[in-house]
Length: 503
Image (cartoon, rainbow, N blue to C red; front, side, top):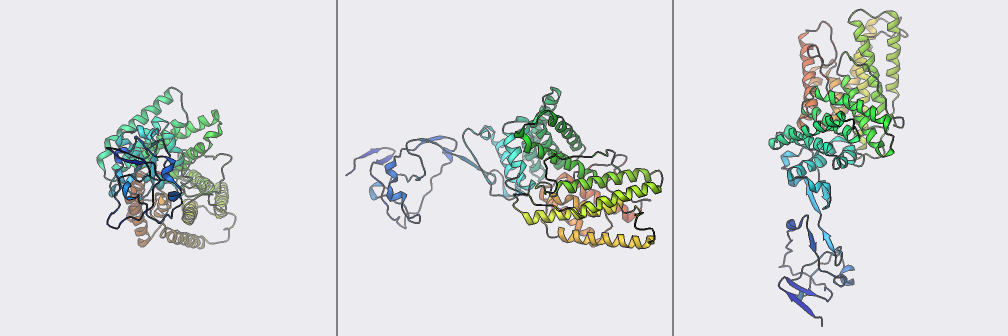
């Protein structure tokens, strides 16, 4: 017979627990643990409470105390005996915002220990941080394990206050774009804090990886907000700072961060320049030496090699456009530019973009990369197709060449449209749709482009998508009105063309 001790709080027994089936008329009553979140609690248990009868029992068998122990609490067998056990606060993004606030459905939960820096955030800041992790980050990459916004930016923001401010500003602004005005002040406040910190670090000559990552997120903010001129300022500043710090810091610890930062800034610089007829900055960009140029980047949806070919096309087209503004091309220029065009086109045809080691949507990522490759060919033909090919067209009538070029572009357009029609709405499709929208399309094709741009815009209401759609629709108006003596490519707003983020 076991001795029992009784207190006002309940019973305690030295004897082992016994298994007994629960009566059907006694439904399980869960205990509300909300008041224990973030606090230390005592669990008065010993090893004897978890004897072989319980540890080795059938998992499908109900656990019940004997009649004398019915007032005791049933404690999980995974608990540690005679120890202080901190409870884990598990914030769930669905607990912080209504369904209408979340544009990206996710079951992601984020556990925080008591000593986690996240626990130091205020309630509003914690909710915004959760929103960034659970809603924004997953939409920025095709890989869970290689998502740089989750694996690099998020943990770094907990250690670097300016980056944290930029992250919170991005979340608050995204909610504002989705017509949730509750965090409008937080968006402006945290952006101001991040800007001040970056400017202070630059003035003091103390630029580090945290500063450059903060500039990236400020660029991210301005692209999503309205894609105004400030995003280009952050882009150029980020590239300059990255080149500066890369020469003075070679630590392998930050190699992954450095690759991501360079990919972000260079990719956005390359793709934005394709929106212009004349590129005043004919700058070439380079990747890191150890980068796999053929591997598809999970954030950009294409390979570095493809982006280099796109950049070469834009630079060549800009040179030709500037010359033709004053005079026609001479024979030597035609031969030189035609050879360069053929080289770029052969390179794009021969590209074999490969999947990265970890991606959660391999077939979709491959399809997007192929769409962008085909669009690179269409972009090349639209920008450089008017150059005569001096090596193969000497004896071919120009009308025959024009018909062949039209048929080639029509085939490219049909293939691109077919691939795009099976892909879900995503901002990574912005550049293909922009290129497609600036070519000669029939009414059905125009309707397809317009509907896809509007559908993508509804997902997150990004400023870059909105600006791209408006520019495409403006190009259609100019074409229909026949107002251009010479059709030009892309955006042209007054004297200063507007750069749009198309990455």
